[in-house]
Length: 285
Image 1 (cartoon, rainbow, N blue to C red):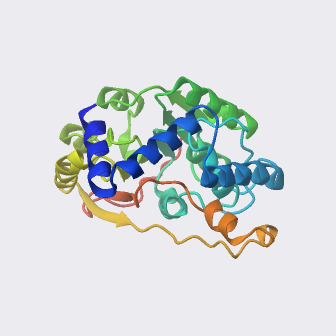
Image 2 (image 1 turned 135 degrees about the vertical axis):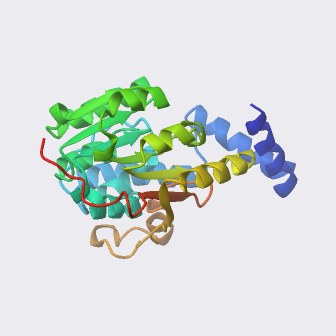
């Protein structure tokens, strides 16, 4: 609550009460099913893209994967998922590291896009998902079933250090991705990082959303540096003029189609086992 209040005060101080009031009204309208002009365009893009791509990923590493029409997280992201642009920088890292591991761990799995996609594409032999939302877990199951990988995926609720220890009996065989809206700073404490020191870990950092977490970010990076080489993953620039099927869309629609509606630039960090711990760890099961 204090973090949320601090964010409101920051917005009001920087942009003024008029902007803050407009933002609050926009959020209220969206909550009751009405939309601002930009939100209306995004809504139209989502509907058009579902018809255009028939709920199927048509480009990229997960090409051919079918997606449920139900959205738990990121309804505006259907277009970028269908076209292979959603978090493409992260998928590029998964492809680089896939030969090292059998198991993929998705913490904050949302609708299972990464977990199901990596299984469908053959990147990994098994996936373990942690998703705190019941609806999210249901959509993951549905997407796994649609793509014939239900027998390769295990779904848990909230990720805690204890839950990770239980679910990952051999963490040296895991590639881990985490996107949990700020909770990463409490999840990856020093004992957990030590236990996972033989894994690659990809984490989206959310301290830009909550300024008071800047010290938590620093603490995470410092602790991780004891066991990992720490690097940042640059995001790709969108390519709105490359897809022939949307060339008749106007400029605003094409640009907004590639927007993932993130409130800030956001950053992903890659934790790689230090050289003495690194090396090929993929083994037969």
